[in-house]
Image (cartoon, rainbow, N blue to C red; front, side):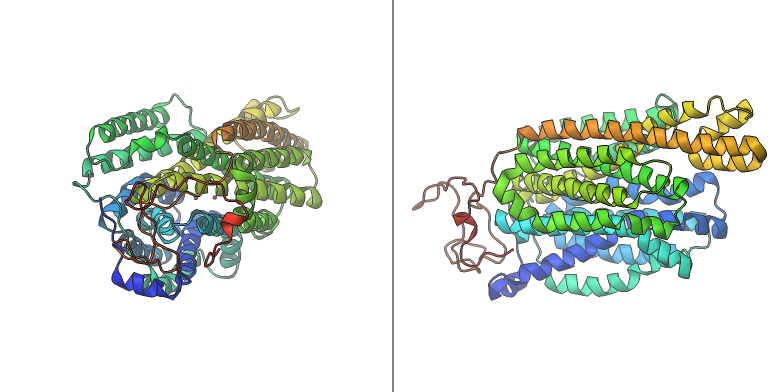
Length: 567
């Protein structure tokens, strides 16, 4: 096992560790771009469709190619970074992301845009786990790392939530390709900054990298995410296009786990899952994202189709959620030290469930104050949960496995998002369709077509016209709002299940002595670390007994030189 830190990185850290916060800024900017790209295209779809004229299948792949490819390759590139260098993988991801953005912006054919979106997914899969694993390396002290993860998760929330706002502005004032073009100057700036400022680090490099295992993991995650997305799009769960990828993906992941348990040098140390805090944190991330993405999707439909807001107005209405998430990330480290992971995750879920139940008072007419309060509570509660879950997961993983642990966290993030769309979308459809079964004056065929979605119902109502069209339009609005209330109640139940799950997390935030080499400290022990404290001595080292794990009390968080991150 080895972990290397370049001499230049050690020299840059000689200023007392201040430079690690500059490193955090670089990592957050790169994460912001990846998070933006995941949602910014959604509001550009109508303009893109009018320009490129893609088929329905091609349009689906234009939207889904990025998240599918990104989710499937997270484990591959996360573990590769542990072996060949996380900084190296991250810089390559920057370059690839910039090139793919240029291709996407200038695409004149649907096939070219799909390929560019897939390439963006490859770049995103290189960037996302690398940012989190480098953060784990640069901040070995858990108290500072909690602050950094709070900032990191807040930036992810900002990127995901402001994507539709920025995308709506660009599409209204320029053309759809501008949503990709903005990435190029930012990547041109961040690539040389990252090359100069980011430290290089590796994890466990003993033995060969398991190429076959990495490909099995990629194919397994791809199959599961593809199947979940098809289910979310309304495909029958037992149909071959849905069940086939799910079964194949699950089988490959089972084989991957068995292979990792047998190998002397696995890609991912499966013993991580024997730690209750690690497994529980991953489960909480899945449930948190399941609720967030599913609710955001339904909320966007409600704001646009029921209240009649434009895409830009819709994005602005969701800004309170973003600001609340930023506040939760900024205060997360302080809260975690005071109440501990168990209470923070548990009460975060409870607060989110309360916000969801409050939103059941939404109706046919606009209630801005209710929506604002609900979105604020929703954003604060979920961000609190995701922050503490990410921090607990990363702190449970040893530094040598940081890339693999980060990849697991990001993969659970993506799977939770896909499951949220599939599960809550299915609940919404099941609750919405019966309301259109027998509308007076509307033919059976028209009612059947209208039951697919609220947007489809509006089209059918416009075609019918007259009294029947008006009746169908009103019935569809009422059915959608009723279905929304049912979906919100289901979401609240899932969130309360997450609160119960959080009881397996530690009661207090423990800050063990870091047994690995700290960022900027000498490669061999014995010399003082750069922040003025002494380098950590491994447990059992001669001359010093093992240091116990201690809660982060007020006295423990104020040493000299201490400083200060939802996928």
